[in-house]
Length: 409
Ligand code: MLT
Image (cartoon, rainbow, N blue to C red; front, side, top):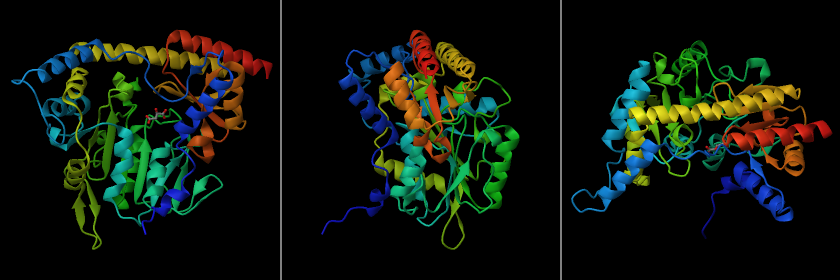
């Protein structure tokens, strides 16, 4: 008899953003005249930078000639891209990461979700609350949790991130083996200081733990002193894997390109307590289960690092960040306490009311989509997340509609 993976039964009915999409579709069907403005999922709305488009066109032309055609690419990604990443994202910040330690992939979501496959089923997993649901759901699928009750899974250590700790949790006292961190944070928009990050690295070293560091939003950091990579902290190479993406940086949400950094000396331990390097293990997994990112897409990603590409990306991000400022200011004027929006495209609004109720109210009365905080965990149950990914005009119209809806009650 064929049997299912019974862990799937523990999962909530659907993935947060699929759930939201079906609620929107249902509403739109019943109200076809309402023009909906989406400040929900963090999906880029600005076109790809011109430098990326030009590079992609050139690469497509190369694929059309026998002499320049390329078939299967190198499993870790083309060296031309990995060299640029190492130089511009890491060496420029004095972070010691080489091109051989970079794995090009099609998304940080897949990589943050898949990495746990390398680790034992009985490890203790710690996640922040609120949390990007992928970190939790993939551990549920792998059987590392018990059942779901009162908004939480058994056997997961939830590290509460609230206004009281500026949304930066402290290392747990009850010993975690695998720790997920995300800065700038999704959904709270919070950033971490170098000193705080040093404490996490120290914790991982002292406890023989591993940190999975999601830095998908680092491009939105606007102050030099805020760390962009965990490898800016000494000693992080042995204890941390980092995930990054071109999705939010350069609008690749539909084009797909990201990368994961696994330093050569990053370790976990075997059943005898002997250190085992994760780089060859991830390489083994990547080459077995992943087909690589299309050549024209890797050329487009490479163009992000060209002088024109860097300027164009800077301008796109600055535009989203002006949206973020407008949203945050407006929500604060309406009396809500907010975090994020300063070094992040997300504004985390403390609404002090049930987040799904507010989601429904904003959809029905304002025709605006937000993300209900409850979808990110118990600590988000009275928050909503607003995303700055939209046109200026839509953001201004959305804020006007929200103002009216909130004032009318
Ligand atoms: C979000 O809105 O949280 C992100 O778009 C989700 C993702 O990047 O997968």
